[in-house]
View 1: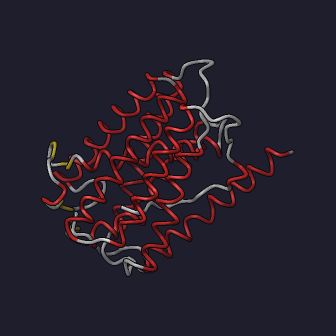
View 2: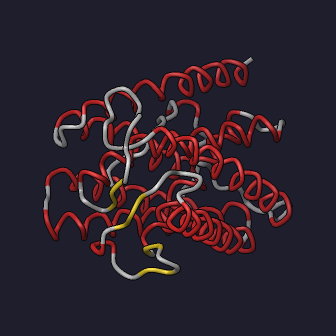
View 3: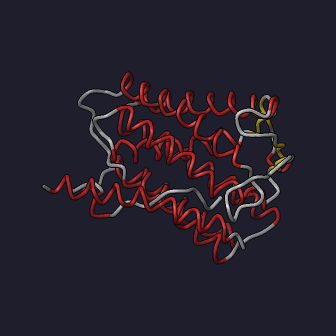
Length: 275
C-alpha cells in the first residue's frame, strides 16, 4: 500500500530534536522502515506484493501506537489502538452488511482472517493513517477543535481517494457499482468518499477527545517528524508510484491535487509561526 492522499510538510516546519534519544529514534526508525518497504510495493507482484502490503500496514500501525505512547503517554497509545481499531471494525462491518455509508463492496479472501467480515488488515490500515492525520491537523489548527477535526477528517478521507483504486487494482476488494466516481477514477464510487468523510469526522472527534483526556501533563514531547514522514511518503510517494509504475494516472492526479490545499495551509501556518 504505497499510498495515501495528502502531503509531506516542509522539513523546515517540523520540530526536530536537538539531541537524539530512544524516544526520537524508535519512531523515526519505524518510519524509515515503512518508507523502504513502501518503495518495494510497485516493484513486486503476486504473493510477494501481498506480503509487502502486510508489512507496510504493520509498520505503520506500530508507528502510530508507539509515537502516540511516547509523545502523549502510554494511556494515549493504548487508547489510540483500541479506539481506532474498534471504530474501523464498526464502520466496516456495517458497510459490508448494509452498503452504508460507503456503498456496496466485498473483500477478497486474499486479505486473510476476518472479524465480523472485516479483514484484520483493515483496522490496522486505519490505525496507520488515523494518528498521522490527526497530528497534521493538530499542527494546522492547534487551538480550534472544530477546525482540527475537520482537517483531520479531510486528510483521512483524502488518503483513501488514492488508496482505494490501488487496492481494487490489487484485487483486495471490489465495488458492486463503482459509478459515478471521481473523474479519472472508474473503479471506486463517489459514495465511498462521502462515507470516509462521515467515518473520519466520527473517528477524529473521538480521537481528539481521547487525546485530551489521556495525555500526560508535562510528559516529554516527541515531535511529529516520523509520522509526518510516513504520511508524506504514503501520499506523495504513492501518487508517484501510481503515475510511474501502477498505471493509475487518475488517482495520481487526485493525490497531487488534494495535496495543494494542505501545502498552502502548512505554508501559511509556518509563516505565522515565524512572526
